[in-house]
Length: 265
Length: 213
Image 1 (cartoon, rainbow over the protein chains, first blue to last red):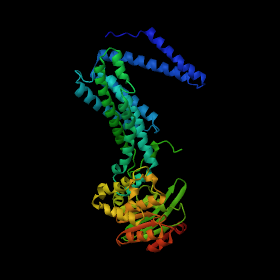
Image 2: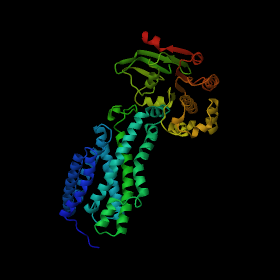
Image 3: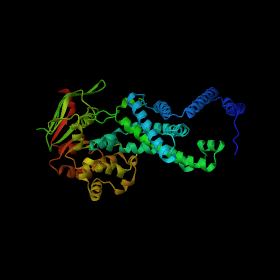
Image 4: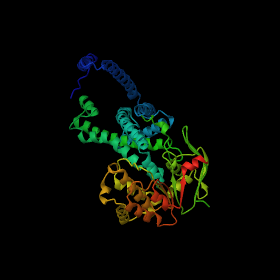
């Protein structure tokens, strides 16, 4: 099947569609049009930058350069996680969450790229960069949900934690119900997506592949693998993120350093 | 040798001084009740003993060794604590009760199911409550469930915050029989209940202690 190339003038026509939400925002005096303009500009410029950069990465295709780019993506995701969570940006959280996300991504990449797809070159750009991006984007959301839930739930139910400690629990034993809750909350969005994918929505990656000429069955095979990578990656990064952070945010009497949390309102 | 000792303990929450050069000594097997007005520091003393709070100065001793560092975990292994209003979130009642019994340190104390049911029955709790969420229990039911956990754990030191405040006369008598049968068990409690205060070997009035540090 021939690919219909999307020219720049045609892409400009696509922007005209934004006039509809802009009109609706204006009519209801939402004040969102400035945000819409800035958001659209940022989205376009960021993607153009990434597009040019990826072209360079694909052409150069060096494993070390690709690894460095993955690290940059993880650093941005790390700061975005802390920023979107309701936690204070302290080094005792930033470093462990970075370490957990980076380790999680490396494990996912190694398993899915090297063992499942079996790339001819280690961390080949064409596969490693988009798959890392897909997994990281989802890890970000799950990390925010999971880490927030873990620490705020611990503050809210401090007495439950203390009751277990007083009954002889190790710190890990006393934290067990808080892990349970954080994992459930962070897994639910991806589990819900997995249950309805294909019926309610067609995922972006698969749609993109089909539009660019790939056969639907190959696109679906990749999509299944991507969903498995996303789910494994999100749970792994939430689990490692909490585990790594816990090494730095507890006093030696097992009490949480509550300065990592925003003030109770 | 005192079983539990506080020596010149000073503790404040911000500007508010709770203890100033506070001293206390409890022997093994002794049943001591603390009384005093609300906010005087009865519950805080338990949190200091369990290492959840740290004194600004002074030392707490358990079996003549300071409660600090890894010794904090040692005393927690020997203790069962009943807070006044046991808030365990939305966990299932059975899970809340059974979880502490499965902690590594407590496994050898694992009771049989009959002990759980007979203890619940003694305190006027039906087995149907086990399937509920903790949040669905009344304050009194939570407190009695907390007592059941403390009894099942069978620890040598009990720290009980107002253990009889939600119990009727019959349940209080049953609690007395259950708790006071073991003469070796040390019980430090807070209470305003004359029935309970009379059962204890000694009552310490914290209002008086504050005036005379």
